[in-house]
Image (cartoon, rainbow over all chains, first blue to last red; front, side):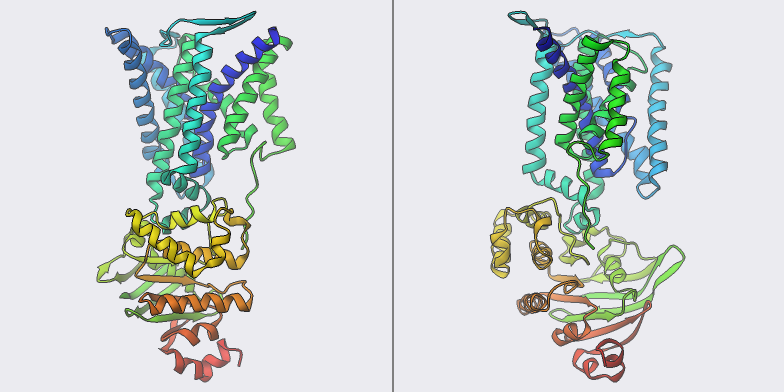
Length: 295
Length: 234
């Protein structure tokens, strides 16, 4: 029974990693860059959530919806703005320059948070109503149920969007061949902005679910989930959307199981050894494929 | 219909296109022939906005397209079938065609063009749900042309449509190019297979290391000794 309980905890944690990993993988797939500031968008989202929750003296339903919507909006706008200001001018620069800029943006966001809120952790009220479900010995918290439900819903929507809408097809086309996509009339800049918007929106959702379970936010809160989600994206195959979903879930389960059966202290080390093993054994990840280019 | 004046393109320090001028009138098939590296593809890329020209003036249907991005130029009705086909390998044939009509809003028009493409390329019909990456080279070329036709362009730039294809498929493709032309589409054709290109063209330009060295009626060029020697295998 304990095993199943740990498995569900892992699924719930993994769902959050998966949501964040989707942002990494989509941006990588389309803009061919690693946005290392992605994790910090989660941190900003959590601060926004805490501010919006405190200021609202609204009805019970509105007191959930208001901070959630504000958090989603701020993260989306932040993601698009970061792309426009920091990454777009470097569209034709070397990948190393873009990578260093991304790390710079990450430190910038952390420093701004440190400047405004100080280094102490700030309490965040959970926006998920308190409830729980018990099936025999298995206990499901409201946070876990909400996390799983929301993630499944989001992933279905995203899969439908990418596979069946025109804009989704355009995103896949840009990911494969920017020039050819332009010749179809696709505006590449708009598509990249949209990708950042979707990635950051998903980060906002991950942020809400994450702090609702964790309860606190500090300037460096986004770094760890961000880097673990990056590992998840690489594990699943960076650039692959199903890969990010799968990688996130697997990583969450590995972490949860390691904490329960091996050692809490070693859990992070085990998670990161997964990255090393993947890079050694199958650098393209579980679902990643090498693109065959014919000339 | 297309007027290019004093076009200059640089790749870093390399002066790839050295002030060429040419024009294509409505209803014509015009070829741009020349050896590998003469600058044929670069010229097309500069016209359709995929690369930026250093200087020069391009006009399409009376509109200045110098500083327009590729996605805007295609919306004016200038289609481009790029070298090496560049179909979206991980999209199905249908999805590729749908991308071709990305700039078109009217569903009825899309349906009409789709049926037209299926009529021109019956082979694609059998492979509608297949990923483009699994098609043969000839089928990919058909898809690349079909995809460009989906937006119902007034003029089509075709870059090396015969490249890497069996002679019999090249014949098919050239038949289709002529069919499209008879229906009123203006065509600018870039080819290494000069004989094939000249045989269907009205006029042609010969490009050599970034300069136009010769121009004239395709039938005259076919019989020109210099052209024969350099491009038609004697």
